[in-house]
Amino acid sequence: MKIRVLEVLASLRRAGAERVAVAIACGLDRSRFETEVISLKPSFPGGFEPVLEDHGVAVRHLGKRNGLDPRMWPRLAAAFGRFRPDIVHTHSYVMRYVLPAWGLARRGTIVHTVHNLAEKEVEPIGRAVHRIAFRAGALPVAISNEVARSFQSMYGFAPAATIPNGADTLHGFRPEAREIWRRARGFGPADFLVASVARFEPQKNPLGLIEAFARALPGCPSAHLVMAGEGSMIEASRRLAARLGVDGRVHFTGLCLDVPELLSACDLFVLASDWEGSSVAVMEAMAGRLPVVATAVGGVPELVENGVTGLLTPAGDGAALAVALADMAGNPAKRREFAEAAARRSRQFDVAAMVERYAALFERVCRGKS
Image (cartoon, rainbow, N blue to C red):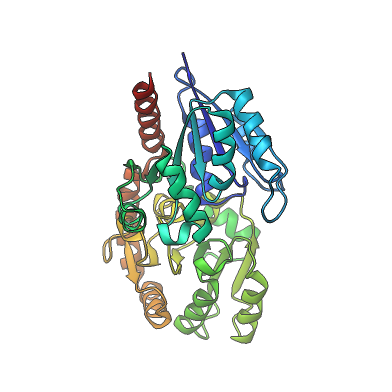
C-alpha cells in the first residue's frame, strides 16, 4: 500500500522552503508514495502551481486571510479526513493551524522541517505551539548541522533527522544562456555581473548588499548587481541605490522564473543574509558554476568552503563584504578556480538524494506505527 504524504505550506511562492517541499512532492517515487500539496494562502502569479501540475501532483488552496485565520482549522481537518495522510509534512509557521486540525482528524504523523535557525523560524507563540506539537509526537527535521544545533539549544533535544536541502545540480549550468540572456537585457559580453537571488526582506539584508556593492566597485560602469526577487524592502532598496548613485548599475528583475539562465549569464553570486538555515540559492549558484561571496551565517559555511569555492564574511560587516566583492571582481583567475571547485562541490547537493532521504524517513516512521 502506498504511503500518503500531505505537504502543507503557507503558500507556493518561489522561495527556499517552498522549493524543497515542491521537490519532495514531485520527486517521491510514485510506486511507493501518493502525494498532495496544501497551500493555506491563495495562488498568485509566478508560484509553484505549474510545476506541481506538470508532475501530476494535486494542489489545494484554503484561501487563508492575512493574520490569524481560524477558518483554517476545520478546512485542514476536512482535508485530512478526505486525503487520509500517513505523513503530514509541515513547513514554516503552519503548525499553529495543522496541530489543532490534526487533533480533530487524528490522521497520520506530523513531520516538521525546520528551515531556519530555531530562534528565527517562528515567533515565541509559534515556538510554544511547536513545543506542544513535538510533545504530541511531531518529528522535527533540520536542514543543516547548524540548524540542528540551534534546534537542540532551543527545544532541549535533537531533531529526529538532519536532511540537507537539495537543488537541481544537473541542469543548473546553461553556457548558451550567457550571451542570449545578456543581449536580451542590454548587457555586454565584457560586463561584470553579480547575481543575487533572494527575497527583499530584513533577513536577506538587501540594503547592506547594495551598500557593499557601491563601496566595492565605485565608478565602474561595467560592473552590475542583478537582484532577483520580491519583498517588502524593494522600494527602500531602489531609493538607496539612487542615493548612492548606483541606480544605473543595480538592476531589480522582480520574481525570476529563469534562475538557471540568470546564473549562467553572471560572473559571481552574492548572499548578504544576516541569518540563514541553509540556502538553496547558493546551491543553485554553485551548480551554475559561479563562485560565491556570502556571509558566514547558519548552514552557509556547510555549503561554501572559504577560499576554495568562494569567500565568506561576517554577518553585518559591510566593509568585509565590499572587500570580498572587490577581490573577486579584480581576479578572473580566482573566479575561474572557485567556479570549477563550486561545480564539483555542488554534486553533493543533488535534489534526488534529498528526496530519497525524506522517503526513507517517511517509510521508517510508517513502519514504526504498523
